[in-house]
Amino acid sequence: MEGHHLILGKITDYLTGKTIRNTHDEQYRQKIARILVEKLGYEKKDVMPRLPVTARAEGKTSRVMLDLAVVISGRIWMIIKYGPGSLVTRHRSSLAISRLLGPYQVPFVVVTNGEDADILSGESGDVTASGLEGIPSKSILIEKMKNDHPRTVSDRQREMEGRILYAFEIDGACPCDDTNLDCGLWSEMNC
Image 1 (cartoon, rainbow, N blue to C red):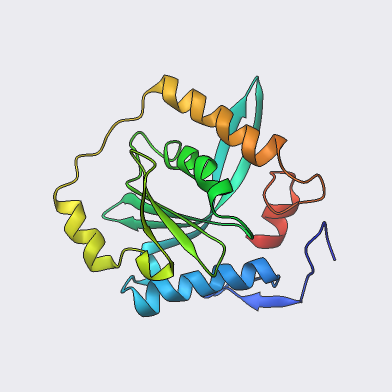
Image 2 (tube, rainbow, N blue to C red):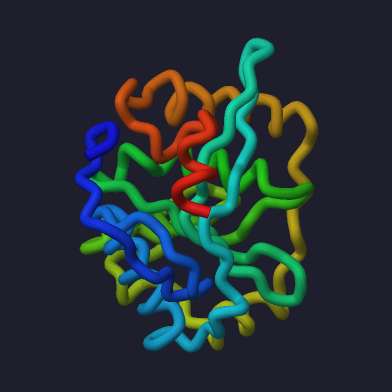
């Protein structure tokens, strides 16, 4: 057992084929990846697992792990942030991530605990759908891509979103949780 995560051995990552730690949280991440590919029509190559996101605040820098990002035509169109428990507590930090990944706003933000999900508009933060069945399929995403005009995220907003992410995911993290912090453990064990 490390931190507060029970290590159940090793598991083969559904998307990459790499061997990673098997935890209860990882089992839910794998479930979501399978749903994306097997039920929602995404190809494995469309889904990037364990994407590091840099959070900065008051001269401090750390990295947070984004569980899944859907990339089509070289652009991130949807992110998925997993966390056990309440969904609403992860809305704001997930929106911050959606504004830090590139020069544009990621349009779809999914917050899930593996059993339920909230799908948020990246731009407004409004909940647009609920439940795992509310996650947009690839065909729906491609249809919405046709009319999308990416909104640029200003440097000032990126700075503020970095502070929000740092406050929620780094300063607010359990000190025994080594799965989200850039302390060397995450990269050695999960990548």
